[in-house]
Amino acid sequence: MRSLTKMDHVLLGVDKALRAMVPHSNPSTRPLPVSNDTIPKLNITEARHVAGLMRINHTGEVCAQGLYHGQAFSAKDNDVKQAMQQSAQEEVDHLVWCETRLSELGSHPSIFTPLWYGMSFGLGAIAGAISNEFSLGFVAETEAQVSEHLQDHIGLLPAQDIRSKEILAQMDIEELHHRELALENGGIALSAPVRHTMRWMANCMKATAYHL
Ligand SMILES: [Fe+2]
Ligand SMILES: [Fe+2]
Image (cartoon, rainbow, N blue to C red; front, top):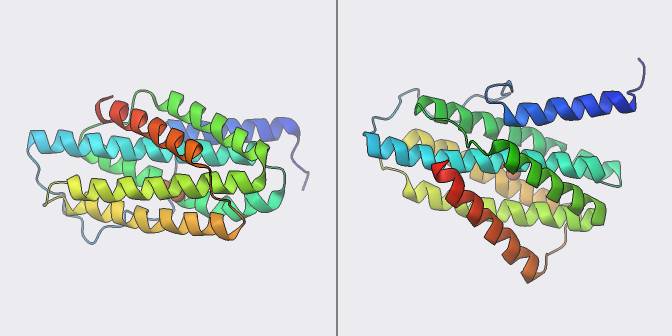
């Protein structure tokens, strides 16, 4: 079998980026993590609210795709790419689960999806270029912050929307595992200014994606 050329890698990168941004273009490897197929009954206000929350979570998963792709683009050694591969695959499932729930709610992902992906790719590429330890520390901090907001969202969902709660709870378990993997592979603790900047950016994204 021939080895991949530079152009092959570029095309593979473009394919992965498009799959992150175009809804329903990824075959999920795992079904929705729900205990039954009952779709919860929600009134219009509740459905809009859940769609806003799921749009934020979908955007978070687009950002995770951008972050992992950006890191793989600039990471200096293959070990980091390998270590993060399983996490990256689980993130694809999360993306598909959020897309599916948004469709069930008759809603759509954020209209700024390409912007979120591009920004996250850039941040991932910068983190990967700085050092493996910083890059993995960046993943660990991102996953910790994602886990916090998933737990917040579980508390904000209408009581009868067990379906969304089960999806977010499974994502939360896996995000915390991604954090552990990044730390086990050498991720360092980030400084307070970097952590605060990440949180500020995440809050801007959340405020926008809830509505748009
Ligand atoms: Fe995720
Ligand atoms: Fe994750």
